Length: 231
Image (cartoon, rainbow, N blue to C red; front, side, top):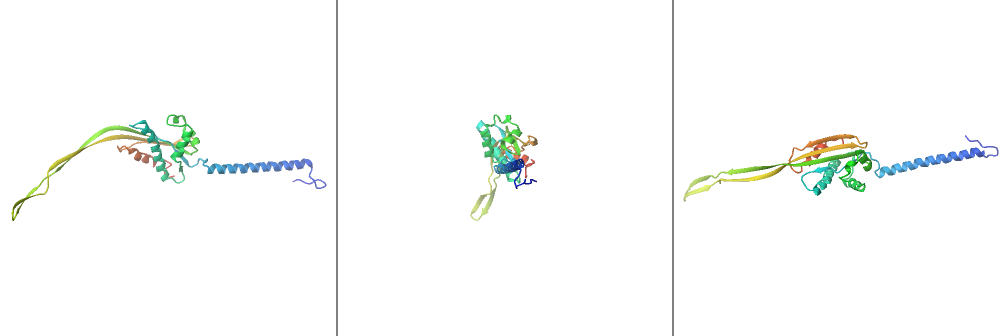
C-alpha cells in the first residue's frame, strides 16, 4: 500500500514505481486481449485443425491413358469425401476442391507428393487426419459365354364341320447369343494418419466383383471399417 507524504503528495520514487506498475499491468492486459482476439480469428478462419480431415487424391493404376488415370485420381477422391461426409458427426471432411487448390499452390502433384510425410501434409493442410489410398485394376481374363435356347413346335389336328384343320400351338427353333466380358481384378487400399504422422488405420481388399466400377464397393467396404466412419 502506498502512503502519502506530508503535504498530501507521494514521494517521487514511489510515484515512479506506481506508474511503472500500472504500465506493466496495462501491457499484460493488452497482450492477453490480443491473444484472445487472434485465437478467435484463427478458429473462425479454420486455422484450428481439430476434427478436420483431408482426403488426398488417390493413386490409380489401370489399363488406360495417362489422362484417364489423372482424372480417376480426383474422381476417387470425390467418392471418398462424399461417402464419409454423409455419415460424419463431429468430423469435417474438407472439400476436395479446397484440398486440391492448396496442393496446387504449394506446387505438390502426383510426381512429388511422396517427398512429403503425412505429418507435413497434415500441418500444411491444417487438418487432424489425412486419408491416403490407391486403386489398382488389372484387365484380367476375357471370358466368352455362349447361351442357346430351344422352343418346341406342337401341331394339333382338329376335325371341324367343314373339314380338317390344323392348329399350330407352338414353333420349334434354335437360337443363341454370345457374351464376351473382361474380368477385371480390382485391389483397393486405404491408410489414415493423424496430425503427428502416426498411421492409425491401414487395410487392403481385392474386390470380389469383376466389373470396371468394382472399386466403388471395395472403397465403401474399407471406409465403413475405419475409425473415422460415423464419427
